[in-house]
Length: 329
Image 1 (cartoon, rainbow, N blue to C red):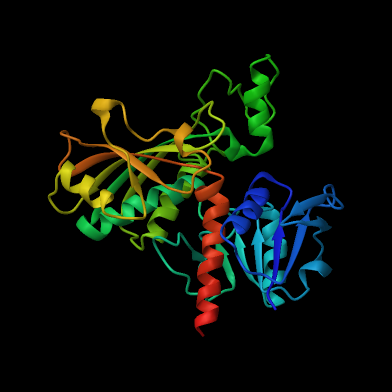
Image 2 (tube, rainbow, N blue to C red):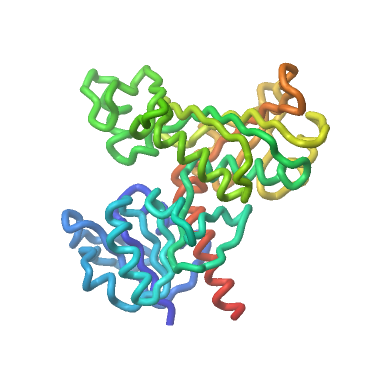
């Protein structure tokens, strides 16, 4: 009997997790939905049944679950994930709490597999997820020397309040999620600033890229920007590879790899767009061109739905991975 729980089930990502579980026909015998005390008691309709959302407490987390999808924030995960783990569950956490913890797997299923030294698995940052898949393809073929990111991140990455700031900013309402208006604006600021001038979001991408690609020596830098787009992140990557190659070879590499979708016909104005990524599972790449100012360096543009592949879908794919691993034993 498979007992599955979702913590944070009433949030944007929690609801996307439910949609993805349904779409991918994830098998379970019992489903339990948790939230904060504020949302406990809410009814959620899923697969023809009505589920009452339960308050997440220590006692509840100590019940016997096989798998827990956690999308309830870092402090909640810090407290409850070890309790679920101690009670025997494999926890897949969507927050940043465990990503760089030694012994915790940081997983993008198209790139790496869990070792499960601990029964907590971390879901990477949304922009990192969509970026490391094309980077892994390039790493396998040419080796990587350096990656420079610039992200253009949608407001849904900040949850419901981010969406509200964008929508209500058109009417002049002061922002709640951001320090400045996001409507008709661009903010070079995601998460808190660190002492070196980078933001925490930028440092996450740097650290997570090295960990997922298993290359501590990889040179990585990032600038993360919030843009007035509701859904889907766009990422520009300047990638320096170790072997000589061409634009055509990289295009062919992506064209032949099922892990990404190549959209690269600029003469006909065809390139990845956030509006086309929204609601889709795929990672789209394009606008591939050589950087003539640096040796063996190429530009790659990448878009993906941050609530799907950048969060809920990746978590459910990890769930499929561990279910397969458990079934194979």
